[in-house]
Length: 180
Image (cartoon, rainbow, N blue to C red; front, top):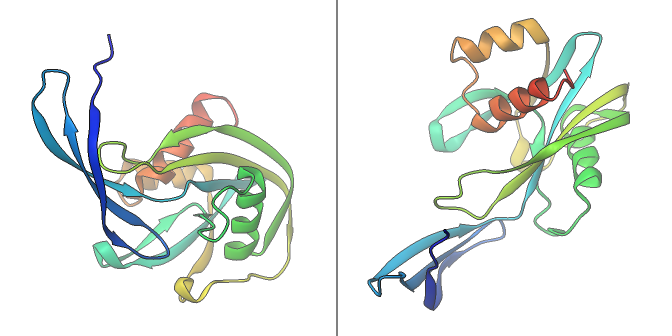
């Protein structure tokens, strides 16, 4: 049986164009009160672009962890948070890799970290790829496109070289559904 939590009040603590941090005063089912902090971010799309046993990935510097990381192309459109997820996926794939896909398979929807954030993501597999020009945002300065084999990707995940949970989850779910 689901337990309900009632929101007594809510206030925005911080906000910028990418996120809002709010603090909610809550009452639990027992009547005990508490505080819950929630990061609000628009949903994003992540794309597994695959062709001939090769997967297209991007490598970029991730400031919060101070490292360059290898991951699948992914992103949100903060200025259009209600965009169709497949349109968003196609836009992010072209922006970050220059690739346009003719075939799209929807893998599923997952939450990023629902203990602290309301953001979720749509997972797609893209095939029948054509190369065009990248169109990187200024925030993506230094982003590099890389191609690895599916076998090499698996080895990198197992070895802990790929640490992006969204990339690992998207790959695993697509594998479990027989899409890779």
